[in-house]
Amino acid sequence: MSKKAVVLDYGFGNVRSAERALARVGAEASITDDFDKAMDADGLLIPGVGAFAACMRGLQEVRGDVIIRHRLASGRPVMGICVGMQILFERGIEHGVETPGLGVWPGAVEPLEAPVIPHMGWNVVDAAADSRLFVGADADTRYYFVHSHAVRDRSRESAGLRNPTTRVSRTTHGEPFVAAVENGALWATQFHPEKSGDAGAQLLTNWIETL
Image 1: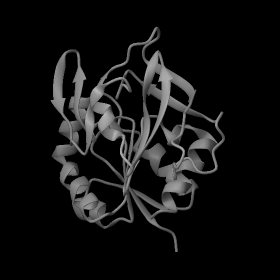
Image 2: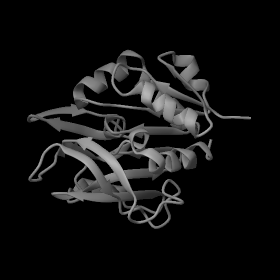
Image 3: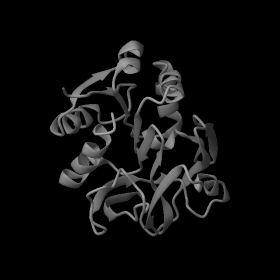
Image 4: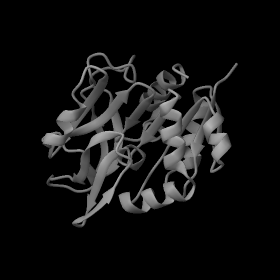
C-alpha cells in the first residue's frame, strides 16, 4: 500500500513539481492547503521559494506553522525544501530586516557571501556520516541549488545543530553552509530534490520509506 504524501500549498513553492517527484517514487501524492488533510497524511512536504518573510506569512495564513508543530509533537514526518527548510530556523535576515521563523532549530538564515549570488546550479553535498537521507548516494553526486540565503556554517548559532540526535550535511558556495538536516521526524534540504533528477528521486525514496 502506497504512502500518502501531501505537498502543503501556502502560495510559495513548486507544488506541482514536488507532487510529480513524490508520485515518481511511488507515493500517493497530492497538494492541499486543508488543515485536516495535511495533518492526516503519512508525510508532509513543505516547499518554498522566494523571500523568507513572505513565506512565513503565507505559511501562517493556512495555519502551516500549527500543522508542522502538531505533526512534530506526535512524531509524524515532515520534510522542508529550500525556503521550506529555512523557515524551520529561528529567524531569517533579508535586506537588514529580521523575521522570526518557526524556531524548530537554532540559527539564522543569512545572505551568503560568495563571488556569485544567487547560488544557482549543481553542487555536491558533504553528507553526514550516519545520514539516512543520503543512503545510496555517491560522494560526488550533485544536487540542484537556487538560493541567496542560507544557514552559514561559521555562525556560532549553527553549533546548536551539533548534537547526537541531529544529522547535518553541508556544502560550500563561497563559504560553508547547511545543505540538509535530519532530526527525528523532521528532514529538510536547502537544495531541490524535485529538480535534481535521479539523485533527488533517491533522496525522496529514502524519505518515503520512513513514512
